[in-house]
Image (cartoon, rainbow, N blue to C red):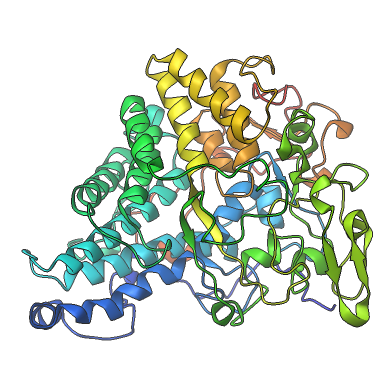
Length: 544
């Protein structure tokens, strides 16, 4: 397979500032808000056409039309969050379009990677603003109210991604500058300074409160839509980020109602690929028609090791777990098998068949070393957590989880403990892990304090689902990728470094498009591009 070489610098990249996005309509129309309000009052169902497009930035390939394998919306942002964190490793080769995440050069204002990660949430915000502006102040149609709730929840979700990228966590930086507020009410788009972290969370909480208060009774047509459980789950995340632990625990419990974690048997095979999986609360519904617009710009191309139309399999750029975390997973835990070991073995491969037609066929453990034109052999610690249907597919139409009940259980455990209810927190955590992942589990067996134990469980359970660097910052932890020696880690040498918890390089920088059109922006500073093997003595309490 011949693939384009990775190009880091995209100097001539055309960018759009967040303030410019306020003028962009989701369908390219030019109808005034007042005119749209008149239409929606007369024909409420007209809103459905615009509403459907609100979800496209979540994961549509080539959303901005760059024609590159790193343009796939929010799912790409979540992938970057993990690739910038401690636990998801990628090969350092000419085909790795996400090398900027491994080396943390993603702070360069001219690179495409940070541009996409800035534009995507602001496009969600702009689309939501435009959609909401089409409604009169008082809305009586119930279906319209349900759509308004979802638009506001999506807007909150987008701001939540941005605020975590551009500033440290709420509990230590709520008065610090975060990102601009993009709204039609901004008086001067060219002079729109960064709002504080507190001001951004005020918007997030107001939007999620409205959704929680008005989504009762809504029956969604797809798990891609946002119902009451999702709204509670998003608010649980927001409360956790703000350190409002009792509220986070209560919201997470509400979000989890009606859902059960995947069983040990269900995660003993590659999974996490179908939005109908019963433990998913919210997900992106990829279809073959959507994926075919650019199959390389999909989660299946990068995160799933069983796709035959993929950068991962075609170039050996597999998404793998860092050895220092994998080594901490007990042998009795079913999740140990979510990644192949150093000898490329995993029990999850048993019973699988990769049929490549003229390229040959492999089954079971032989899949790891199977090679043909569209697949290279797995590398140590390659993930087999995320499945494809069938193995060796070229459709790349697998769905992606955006929220699972397991996350909500882990939020409950963390938040209850931090709000003073240690006994209940321990009971919830042990019940989850013992019942659904490791029958031999004890919360004290790993020798970590309870907060670090929950983070360990999050890092294992939610690996590859987008929480990596955001959890590091939320918990005010150092970024630890190696334990002082090259042998301790599976990160490539150029990506092998540690960063202190207060290192300014953890915060994203604004791209040239924003800096050149919004003159009130004062960019983030502090820190430097990491160097190989720096800070070898840092430890995070989980992988020590």
